[in-house]
Amino acid sequence: MEINGKAALVTGAGSGLGAATARMLAERGARVALLDRDVDAARAEAQRFGGIAIACDVSDASAAEHAVAAARAEHGDAAILVNCAGIAPAARVVGRDGPMPLEVFDHVIQVNLVGTFNLVRLAAAGMQSLEPEGDSGERGVIVNTASVSAFEGQIGQAAYSASKAGVVGMTLPLARELARIGVRVMAIAPGLMSTPLLHRMPPEVQQSLAAQVPFPARLGRPEEYAALVAHIVENPMLNGEVIRLDGAIRMQPK
Image (tube, rainbow, N blue to C red; front, side, top):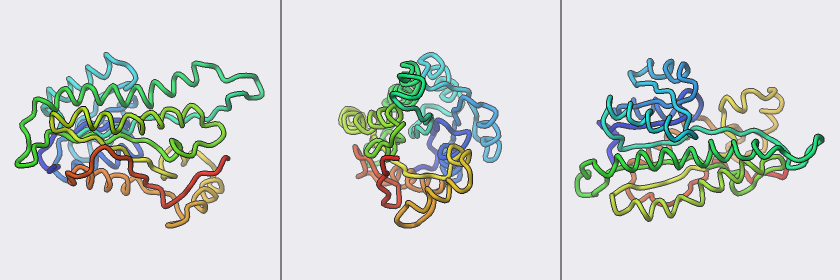
């Protein structure tokens, strides 16, 4: 699918992977709506290239509906959705203070998994009304963000790994279902990426993590994630699959 001229939704677009993806899509001619709970951060990014920033808690049904409607009013129905919103708190199932509070697990699932599905359902409903593109018949492309933790979750990542495994698990059934309306669904499973989440860690911890990557021995860059999104959108044979973007790392237990 051509990116130029398309309307796009990017969640978690105020920083990190989402911000880099929003910039890339705008540079290639898309009309981009940046959705984020931190609307000020999204607005700062949007001002760089003429996008629009919309406050959105992806885990809230009505908030997401209002955000998608606001983007539609400005840009029309989106042909591209990239879900980058997510959280990654670390908590052991049984810690020093006893069992993990159930609400901690539930919150991660609500944001990372339910939030992803929430935007998928809303964006796909709009995509079905778009005119199919050329001979391909494509109407839309959806890219969700999983994680290598879906496959090699570490100690303290039970909630996060479960949420990302859910994103992996729904990739193929979503692609199969939405094929009838000409919408492709893919997921990217990033490894260790240079995002605000890792930047909060001490420099020596960041360096230690980077050294675990076989090649290149560094943290991944948000721009590399965005470049993969661009290729997925433009390559019509990519559908129903999860692509690891990880420098061949396989995460250790801790």
